[in-house]
Length: 294
Image 1: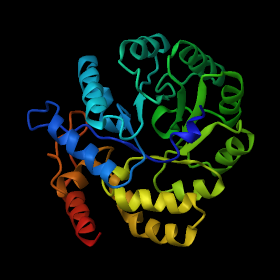
Image 2: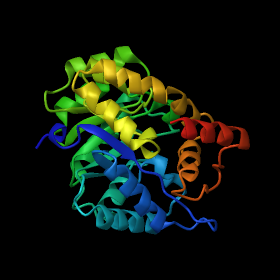
Image 3: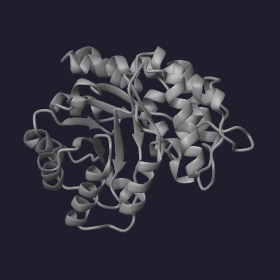
Image 4: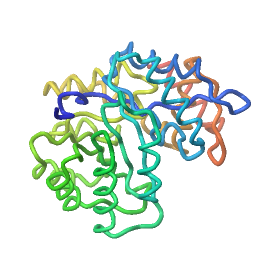
Protein backbone atom coordinates (compact mmCIF):
# COMPACT_ATOMS: atom_id res chain seq x y z
CA UNK A 1 0.00 0.00 0.00
CA UNK A 2 1.20 3.52 -0.79
CA UNK A 3 2.27 5.58 2.21
CA UNK A 4 0.27 8.42 0.63
CA UNK A 5 -2.85 6.55 1.76
CA UNK A 6 -1.57 6.32 5.35
CA UNK A 7 0.59 9.34 6.12
CA UNK A 8 -0.98 12.30 4.35
CA UNK A 9 -1.58 15.32 6.58
CA UNK A 10 0.22 16.28 9.79
CA UNK A 11 2.81 14.08 11.41
CA UNK A 12 4.44 15.27 14.61
CA UNK A 13 8.06 14.60 15.50
CA UNK A 14 7.31 14.01 19.17
CA UNK A 15 9.60 15.36 21.88
CA UNK A 16 11.02 13.21 24.70
CA UNK A 17 10.10 14.72 28.09
CA UNK A 18 12.61 14.38 30.90
CA UNK A 19 12.25 14.68 34.67
CA UNK A 20 14.50 17.00 36.67
CA UNK A 21 17.00 14.14 37.07
CA UNK A 22 17.02 13.78 33.25
CA UNK A 23 15.34 10.38 33.31
CA UNK A 24 12.56 9.85 30.77
CA UNK A 25 9.19 11.14 31.95
CA UNK A 26 6.86 8.55 30.47
CA UNK A 27 3.76 10.08 32.10
CA UNK A 28 4.49 13.39 30.39
CA UNK A 29 5.19 11.60 27.10
CA UNK A 30 1.74 10.06 27.30
CA UNK A 31 0.21 13.47 27.98
CA UNK A 32 1.96 14.98 24.94
CA UNK A 33 0.90 12.06 22.73
CA UNK A 34 -2.75 12.43 23.79
CA UNK A 35 -2.55 16.22 23.39
CA UNK A 36 -1.48 15.77 19.77
CA UNK A 37 -3.86 12.97 18.82
CA UNK A 38 -6.87 14.61 20.51
CA UNK A 39 -6.15 17.83 18.60
CA UNK A 40 -6.09 16.33 15.13
CA UNK A 41 -2.54 15.22 14.34
CA UNK A 42 -2.67 12.39 11.79
CA UNK A 43 0.38 10.36 12.85
CA UNK A 44 3.26 10.29 15.33
CA UNK A 45 6.97 10.12 14.56
CA UNK A 46 8.77 8.46 17.45
CA UNK A 47 12.55 8.68 17.94
CA UNK A 48 13.03 11.53 15.52
CA UNK A 49 15.84 13.96 16.22
CA UNK A 50 13.32 16.32 17.87
CA UNK A 51 13.05 13.54 20.45
CA UNK A 52 16.73 14.14 21.33
CA UNK A 53 17.73 10.74 20.00
CA UNK A 54 21.45 11.66 19.84
CA UNK A 55 21.47 11.64 23.67
CA UNK A 56 19.32 8.53 24.16
CA UNK A 57 20.95 5.15 24.62
CA UNK A 58 19.61 2.10 22.82
CA UNK A 59 17.71 0.71 25.81
CA UNK A 60 15.97 4.05 26.28
CA UNK A 61 14.98 4.07 22.63
CA UNK A 62 13.47 0.59 22.98
CA UNK A 63 11.54 1.65 26.09
CA UNK A 64 10.22 4.83 24.44
CA UNK A 65 9.12 2.91 21.38
CA UNK A 66 7.37 0.20 23.38
CA UNK A 67 5.59 2.80 25.51
CA UNK A 68 4.57 4.80 22.43
CA UNK A 69 3.04 1.81 20.65
CA UNK A 70 1.14 0.80 23.79
CA UNK A 71 -0.05 4.35 24.50
CA UNK A 72 -1.23 5.05 20.96
CA UNK A 73 -2.85 1.62 20.68
CA UNK A 74 -3.50 1.88 16.93
CA UNK A 75 -5.29 5.24 17.19
CA UNK A 76 -2.95 6.75 14.57
CA UNK A 77 -0.01 5.38 12.54
CA UNK A 78 3.51 5.51 13.98
CA UNK A 79 6.69 6.24 12.04
CA UNK A 80 9.98 5.30 13.71
CA UNK A 81 13.11 7.40 13.28
CA UNK A 82 16.33 5.46 12.72
CA UNK A 83 19.22 7.25 11.06
CA UNK A 84 22.94 7.87 11.28
CA UNK A 85 26.20 8.13 9.42
CA UNK A 86 27.25 4.49 9.86
CA UNK A 87 25.25 2.40 7.40
CA UNK A 88 25.82 -0.93 9.15
CA UNK A 89 24.87 0.53 12.53
CA UNK A 90 21.63 1.93 11.11
CA UNK A 91 20.73 -1.48 9.70
CA UNK A 92 21.56 -3.17 13.01
CA UNK A 93 19.41 -0.71 14.94
CA UNK A 94 16.46 -1.17 12.57
CA UNK A 95 16.70 -4.93 12.99
CA UNK A 96 17.00 -4.65 16.79
CA UNK A 97 13.96 -2.44 17.42
CA UNK A 98 10.42 -3.78 17.76
CA UNK A 99 8.89 -2.06 14.74
CA UNK A 100 6.46 -4.72 13.56
CA UNK A 101 3.51 -2.33 13.95
CA UNK A 102 5.22 0.74 12.49
CA UNK A 103 3.95 2.27 9.24
CA UNK A 104 7.45 3.21 8.09
CA UNK A 105 11.00 4.14 9.09
CA UNK A 106 12.18 7.74 8.79
CA UNK A 107 15.92 7.83 8.17
CA UNK A 108 17.96 11.03 8.04
CA UNK A 109 20.80 11.13 5.54
CA UNK A 110 24.33 10.74 6.96
CA UNK A 111 25.58 13.70 8.94
CA UNK A 112 29.10 15.10 9.36
CA UNK A 113 31.08 12.71 7.15
CA UNK A 114 29.65 14.30 3.96
CA UNK A 115 29.42 11.36 1.53
CA UNK A 116 29.10 11.90 -2.20
CA UNK A 117 25.71 11.52 -3.86
CA UNK A 118 26.74 7.99 -4.82
CA UNK A 119 27.58 7.27 -1.19
CA UNK A 120 24.19 8.60 -0.08
CA UNK A 121 22.47 6.51 -2.74
CA UNK A 122 24.26 3.32 -1.64
CA UNK A 123 23.65 4.12 2.06
CA UNK A 124 19.91 4.24 1.49
CA UNK A 125 19.95 1.30 -0.94
CA UNK A 126 21.53 -0.98 1.66
CA UNK A 127 19.21 0.24 4.42
CA UNK A 128 16.09 -0.20 2.29
CA UNK A 129 17.08 -3.71 1.19
CA UNK A 130 17.60 -4.78 4.81
CA UNK A 131 14.62 -3.03 6.39
CA UNK A 132 11.35 -4.84 7.14
CA UNK A 133 9.35 -1.62 6.74
CA UNK A 134 9.15 1.08 4.06
CA UNK A 135 11.83 3.76 4.23
CA UNK A 136 11.09 7.50 4.22
CA UNK A 137 14.18 9.48 3.28
CA UNK A 138 14.93 12.57 5.35
CA UNK A 139 16.88 15.36 3.68
CA UNK A 140 17.88 18.09 6.15
CA UNK A 141 21.08 19.66 4.80
CA UNK A 142 21.16 22.44 7.40
CA UNK A 143 21.89 19.74 10.00
CA UNK A 144 23.66 17.00 8.07
CA UNK A 145 26.05 19.21 6.12
CA UNK A 146 25.20 17.57 2.79
CA UNK A 147 22.16 18.04 0.56
CA UNK A 148 20.58 14.98 -1.01
CA UNK A 149 20.10 16.20 -4.56
CA UNK A 150 16.84 16.02 -6.47
CA UNK A 151 18.51 13.61 -8.90
CA UNK A 152 19.56 11.27 -6.07
CA UNK A 153 16.13 11.38 -4.47
CA UNK A 154 14.40 10.68 -7.76
CA UNK A 155 16.81 7.83 -8.53
CA UNK A 156 16.16 6.23 -5.14
CA UNK A 157 12.40 6.67 -5.54
CA UNK A 158 12.34 4.94 -8.92
CA UNK A 159 15.01 2.27 -8.43
CA UNK A 160 14.66 1.03 -4.83
CA UNK A 161 11.25 -0.56 -4.23
CA UNK A 162 11.27 -0.21 -0.45
CA UNK A 163 11.92 3.54 -0.51
CA UNK A 164 8.43 4.99 -0.39
CA UNK A 165 8.72 8.66 0.54
CA UNK A 166 10.76 11.64 1.68
CA UNK A 167 10.65 14.29 4.36
CA UNK A 168 12.18 17.21 2.46
CA UNK A 169 13.60 19.88 4.77
CA UNK A 170 15.44 22.08 2.35
CA UNK A 171 14.31 25.63 1.68
CA UNK A 172 15.36 25.21 -1.96
CA UNK A 173 11.95 25.41 -3.60
CA UNK A 174 13.41 24.64 -7.03
CA UNK A 175 14.65 21.30 -5.68
CA UNK A 176 11.24 20.63 -4.11
CA UNK A 177 9.52 21.24 -7.44
CA UNK A 178 11.92 18.95 -9.29
CA UNK A 179 11.27 16.12 -6.83
CA UNK A 180 7.51 16.65 -7.06
CA UNK A 181 7.64 16.73 -10.85
CA UNK A 182 9.68 13.55 -11.19
CA UNK A 183 8.42 11.33 -8.35
CA UNK A 184 6.55 8.05 -8.88
CA UNK A 185 2.81 8.58 -8.50
CA UNK A 186 2.64 6.70 -5.18
CA UNK A 187 5.75 8.32 -3.63
CA UNK A 188 5.01 10.27 -0.43
CA UNK A 189 6.57 13.74 -0.19
CA UNK A 190 6.12 15.73 3.02
CA UNK A 191 7.57 19.02 4.15
CA UNK A 192 10.13 19.13 6.93
CA UNK A 193 9.89 22.89 7.39
CA UNK A 194 6.97 24.23 9.43
CA UNK A 195 7.22 27.74 8.02
CA UNK A 196 7.24 26.53 4.40
CA UNK A 197 4.79 23.64 4.56
CA UNK A 198 1.75 25.55 3.25
CA UNK A 199 3.75 26.79 0.26
CA UNK A 200 5.07 23.29 -0.35
CA UNK A 201 1.61 21.74 -0.10
CA UNK A 202 0.50 24.28 -2.72
CA UNK A 203 3.22 22.84 -4.97
CA UNK A 204 1.93 19.30 -4.41
CA UNK A 205 3.41 17.94 -1.19
CA UNK A 206 1.28 15.53 0.82
CA UNK A 207 1.64 17.13 4.24
CA UNK A 208 4.33 17.73 6.84
CA UNK A 209 6.31 16.13 9.63
CA UNK A 210 6.26 18.96 12.11
CA UNK A 211 7.96 20.21 15.26
CA UNK A 212 5.40 22.99 15.75
CA UNK A 213 2.54 20.49 15.96
CA UNK A 214 3.90 19.44 19.37
CA UNK A 215 2.94 22.86 20.68
CA UNK A 216 -0.22 23.98 18.85
CA UNK A 217 -1.52 20.79 17.22
CA UNK A 218 -5.11 21.91 16.67
CA UNK A 219 -4.26 25.12 14.84
CA UNK A 220 -1.40 23.56 12.92
CA UNK A 221 -3.23 20.43 11.75
CA UNK A 222 -6.25 22.54 10.79
CA UNK A 223 -3.98 24.76 8.71
CA UNK A 224 -2.45 21.74 6.95
CA UNK A 225 -5.82 20.12 6.26
CA UNK A 226 -7.18 23.36 4.79
CA UNK A 227 -4.15 23.61 2.51
CA UNK A 228 -4.60 20.01 1.37
CA UNK A 229 -8.20 20.91 0.52
CA UNK A 230 -6.90 23.84 -1.59
CA UNK A 231 -8.52 26.28 0.86
CA UNK A 232 -5.47 28.50 0.98
CA UNK A 233 -7.29 31.64 2.13
CA UNK A 234 -8.23 30.10 5.48
CA UNK A 235 -5.01 28.08 5.72
CA UNK A 236 -2.92 31.19 5.12
CA UNK A 237 -4.76 33.10 7.86
CA UNK A 238 -3.75 30.46 10.43
CA UNK A 239 -0.23 30.30 9.02
CA UNK A 240 0.35 33.99 9.67
CA UNK A 241 -0.99 33.69 13.21
CA UNK A 242 1.58 30.96 13.88
CA UNK A 243 4.49 32.49 11.94
CA UNK A 244 6.20 34.18 14.89
CA UNK A 245 5.81 30.97 16.85
CA UNK A 246 7.95 29.15 14.27
CA UNK A 247 10.68 31.72 14.82
CA UNK A 248 10.60 31.12 18.57
CA UNK A 249 10.69 27.34 18.14
CA UNK A 250 14.00 27.40 16.31
CA UNK A 251 15.58 30.60 17.66
CA UNK A 252 18.13 28.77 19.83
CA UNK A 253 17.99 25.01 19.33
CA UNK A 254 15.51 22.25 18.67
CA UNK A 255 13.72 21.01 20.77
CA UNK A 256 14.43 23.76 23.34
CA UNK A 257 11.73 25.92 21.76
CA UNK A 258 9.18 23.12 21.68
CA UNK A 259 9.89 22.17 25.28
CA UNK A 260 9.56 25.81 26.35
CA UNK A 261 6.12 25.95 24.71
CA UNK A 262 4.98 22.68 26.27
CA UNK A 263 6.23 23.70 29.71
CA UNK A 264 4.24 26.95 29.43
CA UNK A 265 1.18 24.80 28.69
CA UNK A 266 1.91 22.79 31.84
CA UNK A 267 2.41 19.51 29.98
CA UNK A 268 6.11 18.80 30.67
CA UNK A 269 9.06 19.92 32.74
CA UNK A 270 11.46 22.12 30.80
CA UNK A 271 14.47 19.78 30.87
CA UNK A 272 16.94 18.89 28.10
CA UNK A 273 20.08 16.78 28.12
CA UNK A 274 23.45 18.32 27.37
CA UNK A 275 24.79 19.52 25.05
CA UNK A 276 21.36 21.10 24.51
CA UNK A 277 20.13 23.59 27.08
CA UNK A 278 16.68 25.03 27.82
CA UNK A 279 15.54 28.24 26.18
CA UNK A 280 17.05 31.43 27.56
CA UNK A 281 14.93 33.51 29.93
CA UNK A 282 14.41 36.12 27.19
CA UNK A 283 13.14 33.52 24.71
CA UNK A 284 11.01 31.84 27.40
CA UNK A 285 9.34 35.20 28.09
CA UNK A 286 8.59 35.70 24.37
CA UNK A 287 7.14 32.19 24.16
CA UNK A 288 5.00 32.80 27.25
CA UNK A 289 3.56 35.94 25.65
CA UNK A 290 2.92 34.12 22.37
CA UNK A 291 1.12 31.27 24.15
CA UNK A 292 -1.08 33.76 26.00
CA UNK A 293 -1.98 35.55 22.75
CA UNK A 294 -2.65 32.29 20.92
